[in-house]
Image 1 (cartoon, one colour):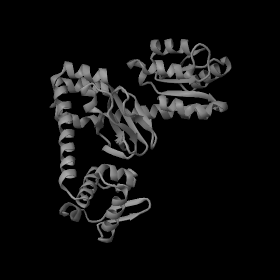
Image 2: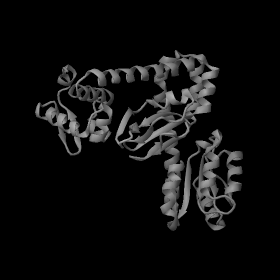
Image 3: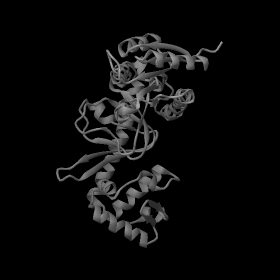
Image 4: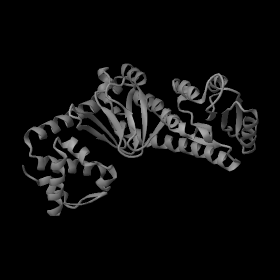
Length: 353
């Protein structure tokens, strides 16, 4: 007999709590309920439900506190979490989403809205597990099928996927390192801000790429900031989890050393280009690198501004505009307000100093 999906409802209003559980029960879900946040946290840790519905304004412990406490424990940190909120509280929902909530329902909600929200999150969770399975496959070549791989996969696939909006900051320079980030979908940039206010890009990371490896292994705080270039999905592999795996399995340590070494080699190549190549050639090589990274997609999907391109090449924004205009006149790229396509990648690759 197939196990029923368990839903925990944390709500201080008995009428809303009981009617919500009744609707879910009629739809075939197993339910458990708590009358306040404190009891809800205890229930979640004891029952380990498949999904949690939680009110925001409650006695004892509010919804934000519930989410914060559950996120601190590995067993409950990945459970899909939906806030139940009154219309007057909708302005506070951004805070909840940034803390890790997956969705919210505005009270009063009807039967269809409730079931759709629950089923949507369950479907997303199932899809995320499939995405992880695919994304982590490429590590197989680094681990060579050793025991550490299987243990690492088990831990990583239990992590919760975080949804971040375009231009949302993931961490700031100087923040304490929480772990290593894996990009599931979208693109993320890391950058530093110079004394004169200029933004200098230190990297761009797309699907199946890690960032934050070097700073986590060094034990230092973040040396740059990270921001989503577009709507993205990320997974944080906590520092203590990664350190435990590195200490326990030599093959895991070797894999991360290789990832780190590749990043160092890429950084050295960019420094050599800054030292010896003309600004025209540096821009050409940057466009080639981005094109190789994106494959068939246009560069427009990265939403790169002149400032971003300037930061990656180490030149002024005015120079970026001039070089791109030259490339357009030479038929190498096509460029409009919201579009940047490479028309002749061979010319870019062969461009001399």
